[in-house]
Length: 313
Image (cartoon, rainbow, N blue to C red; front, top):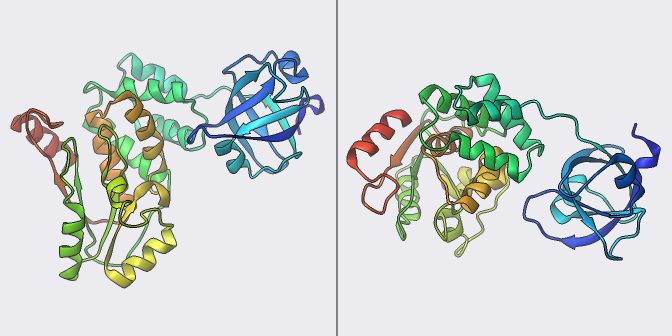
C-alpha cells in the first residue's frame, strides 16, 4: 500500500481547528526527512481503510516523539483513528481542479465540468484554506456570469444529499441578509405551516454578521438535525428550521462560508449559488427570496436588487 518506512504511530493531542485537517509531526521525524516535508505541506494520511488530506505543522518540542504523528480533532474524527493506531503518510497527488481556479483568477469563464471538479475536491477535503480563499476571491467582484452561477449551483447540489417529499408544492424562503435583527424566519415558518404547506426551512450560520438565522434559532432549540430527523419533524409538524450544514445538503457551501466569514466577503455569484443549492437540495419547489435594499444592506440600490432578482429567477 504505502512505503513501509512512512509508518507512524498516532498520538491524540486534542487540538481544535474547526473543520480544518491538520497533521503534526516532529521536526526530526524520519518521514519528514526522507520525503522532504516542510511546514504547511499538504500530505495524505491513510489508515488501512480510509484517507484524508491535511496540512502539516512541524513540532520542535517533546509533545511528539519522532515516530509519532498527531492530528487535529477534525482530522482524527474523519479518519476515526484511535491512539497508537498505525498511520501511513504519503505525498499528495496533484489536484487537477486547481488549474480551473487559476484560470478563474485570470478571469476565464469556466464550464460545468470545471465547477463540478472544483466542488468535488472541496467536499473531499483536498483544498486547503489557502486554496478555498483563492477560489472565493477569484469569483468575487462580479466575475461570474449567469451561466457560471448556474453551473456552480448545480455542482453544489450534486455534491451532497437531496431530500424528497413526494409533494407537488414544497416551499421555502430566504433573506440575503446584511441587516441586523431581521429574524422573520420563525414567524414565516409558523404561519406557512399552519396553513398546511410543507416548509423544510434550511438556514445558514453567519457570514458577514455576528449571527445568522441558524445561530439565532439555536438559542431556543437544536438546529443541528440529521436528514432522518428533519424528515421526522417535517412529517409531524409540516415544517422545520434547521442549519443546512448539518444535513449534508450542499456541503461545499458550508466549507466556503467559513472562509467567506473570515474574509468578510459574500460575493453575489456565490451568494446566489449558495441560496439556490441549499433550497433545491432540501427539496423545495417554490422559494421566496427577500432582498433588502438600502445604504447598509448588501444591495445598495433598487436597480442592483432588480438585476440580481432576475438572476435568481
